[in-house]
Length: 333
Ligand SMILES: [Zn+2]
Image 1 (cartoon, helix red, strand yellow):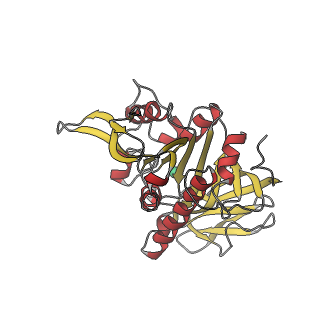
Image 2 (cartoon, rainbow, N blue to C red; image 1 turned 90 degrees about the vertical axis):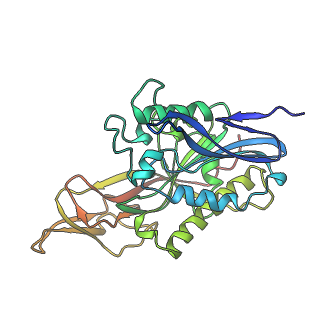
Image 3 (tube, rainbow, N blue to C red; image 1 turned 60 degrees about the vertical axis):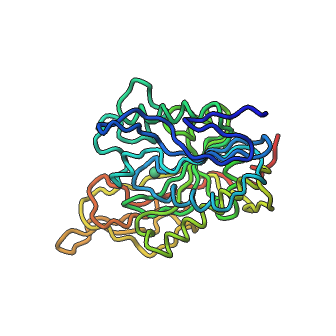
């Protein structure tokens, strides 16, 4: 008999889907806390993919799109390993906040990953996840969105490594903007890149797109992209599709310099625009405009703030400056 694979408290044989969790200790009710995981082990060995949702607790696009993907997977027809983590940061997800509101020392899991075994609360949760993932993962997708303040539209963040850029390209035709990010500590994707493996952070959605059909559409598009990835790596049947070429860019964060009401201009996301294009305005409560936000360079916006109440330093526009056009991300050296 083939040896069972153990991940967290889940033991899985080829051709099985098992649910369980990554143990996180005991709460005051005396209950064992776990980070829920769903482990799909194909009938043959192959690439090992982890899809991680809700590193940030105000981003339910992760769990929803994962659930949609899993409905389309027949593990008896699959190669390799798919581990789905609907929500990495349960405390944050429970609160609907970016981080665990009770953890003021390591609040943002996507900045402190992989944490520490003896660290602050969120660091320990991150460490448990990394310990469970690191020896069973070749490719990692972390799902993000604009959360409770902004809408983000089909942008990827990936380090400049062949494995990560190939994974980014495997997301399919909609996903042709790949912003630079670093390798090393900080996030699951950066840790994977540090190991020379594929790790990407993908951005789609926000609270302005959570009502019925809008949210279904966000979930559908994300799940379709993961399925394209599984097809690209030969894990499931079907023909993958790709963008014709990719835009390699870097993010410029446009932050408010004034406190007031941010009203975005009706500008198209993910469309080339010229430096100086007006992106939005900030008004005071007398109705006077106190700041105009403009494109800092030729490029495109991939995210815009919808939460009108804005304070100095709040994020208003997610802007990408394009550094290169690439058509070689799928050419393996
Ligand atoms: Zn996020």
